[in-house]
Length: 452
Image 1: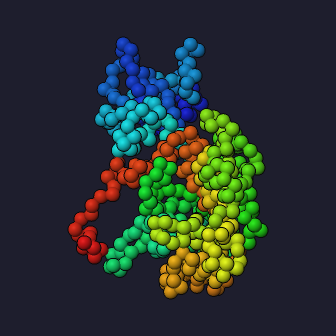
Image 2: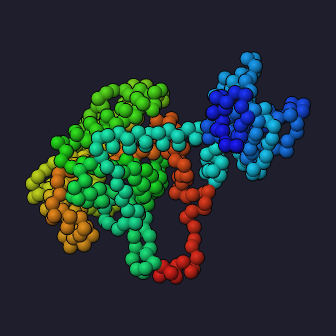
Image 3: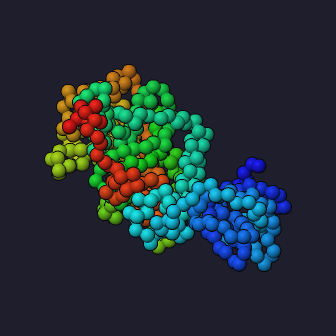
């Protein structure tokens, strides 16, 4: 007999069926046992005459007949509430120990470290299942929408090279080339620009990014972003308009209980935002207690460089591949603090959820930007040889954006932490309590890698 999913039982009145799933709850009334059986599609009530040695979360199979419930016994709280299963046979497929915490509520009251240690149990709760289901539906919509707009999804490497820009890298030792290291990608930035040079005019990727940064509430050491790049944009407005329409579509089709404060999304320069709100990601909700309000805003005209006090030198406010609004290289070198960039962010309810820009495609200007940040021409050519070589073979004007999907999901799902929208997140101090990572490795592994 082929398995029937719980949700399909309502189509099989008076039919003999086979169900498989988890014992969500069990109740005994005299000689009759009532079981709420759970599978991925929801709950169904099973009725069995006789005693059973079952406990919560046992995995069972049930053979029985689907029967209509009497009118006064219909359960409107579940989709299968109009029927129940009169079980003839129940077999235990797997037993389960008592759970370390209940899974029938939201779980916010349970210590988060305890939940993360048993994340595979925490994920049984409806709230987290719904979060991951909606996450999947959103990413599917993104993929389908960009495909319709002639974008091509291309995967880029996870093992790459450490380069002196952006955040701190996670590094991976090489066994075959002892003393040399790979780096995990902070973003696909260089690869996607090289794809543009190769003639892929519309690229995107649902990309995994890894940064060894100090812990923060809205960050994880690994995260997911929508990464895209286009060749020959008419202006940065073309990219902003693309992303604006995409988010409007996502909210309209998948988050019907949400509403957007203002369409089209308002725009404000970095200078205006800092003067008016003292932040470059202002929260423009009309009612900040309304969790269904989504206030998007684009922030434009960021400074190209900012002074890094800890390093006593200039650094890129976003990244060095951003196109400066000044074309005179001598002025860029002489007055870096006055140079604006074709850089824009998208903020939502007080959080940055995306950052994009037009990119520099002129080799001389790119060299000048790196020099402002204290890198010698020799160092630049060594660290970014592949990059400059590609540019010398010709690269069109281009630009792109990266959207932090975890932050967007946290806001859209009314979650206070991005850990609630990621299947297996790290703690606030970047530990995985479930598998106990990071951890030591054996002396044999170290020896193979040439490390002590």
